[in-house]
Amino acid sequence: MRTNHTAERLANLTFNLLARCQVKEEWLATQRGLFQAEFKCLRLFGSDKSLNCKKIAKRMNLSQSRLTRIIDGLVTKGYMNREIDQTDRRNMRVSLSRRGKILTNKIDKDFIEIHEDILQNIDSSKHESLIKSMEQLLTATEKWRQ
Image (cartoon, rainbow, N blue to C red):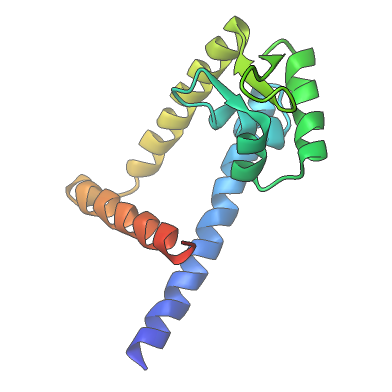
């Protein structure tokens, strides 16, 4: 019975945390003149110089046509470049433009600042255990889908 109660609490926490994260992302996207889907697409790049559209669509759980509209918007705004994938001419690769790299660096800094603010509401002695617990939760969640 205890596991069921714990699972219920975890389910409610993750649901509410996801909702708060979406609000946070929407606010950040709006601050930078982006739609939330464009914001998420830019955040996927991290240290990758370029990604193929199939990989992005899979990571974002989108259809190829929906992703194309998002990328069209980012290309129009000057944040992405698009080119035919030399290893598979049926696929497109997209990369961040110089302007896109500058924007993603700003977004990354904004994201860190928000999380610094959030951490201010948690006793600093609990920060490390919080991060370790979240890492374990992420790992367990990833294993669940394999």
